[in-house]
Structures are given as structure tokens and as C-alpha cells.
Length: 74
Image 1: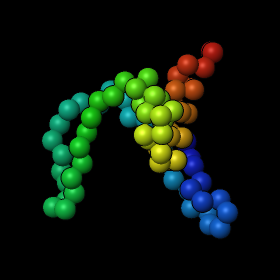
Image 2: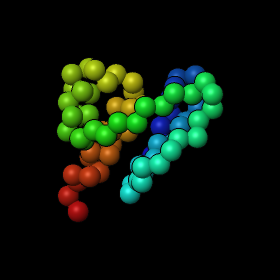
Image 3: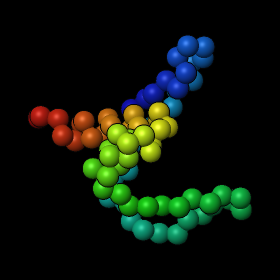
Image 4: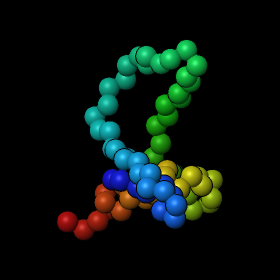
């Protein structure tokens, strides 16, 4: 999925990917990086969006699109 971050005055776009079948391993981060990985249920993430607790547009778009595609009739 590709998202335009600011359509009014620039052409920046970001790509959002779904990672599947992940295997726990060690992180190889830069010294100043700190990334916390957490497992969430999709329904809980959607609830956080509806409650306004996830307000980042890119994150909300990615989660909502994933849910829509997952539950779309085939």
C-alpha cells in the first residue's frame, strides 16, 4: 500500500508492508535506536483507532486497510 503523506504541497509517499510468518530473533540496531516489538490483536488496534488513542494517520490507514482487506468478501 502506498500513502501520500501531504497531498496539498508535496509529493512525498510512503509504502506500507504487511510482514507475515515472522520468526523471533535478535535485533541489530544502531546505538541510538530503541524499538519495542509488541503483539496485538487486530480488534484491539481498531478499537484504539476508534477511541482516538492511535491518531497517527499513516498507522490508522495501514491498520484499517489491513482489516478491510482481511474481512472483505472474496
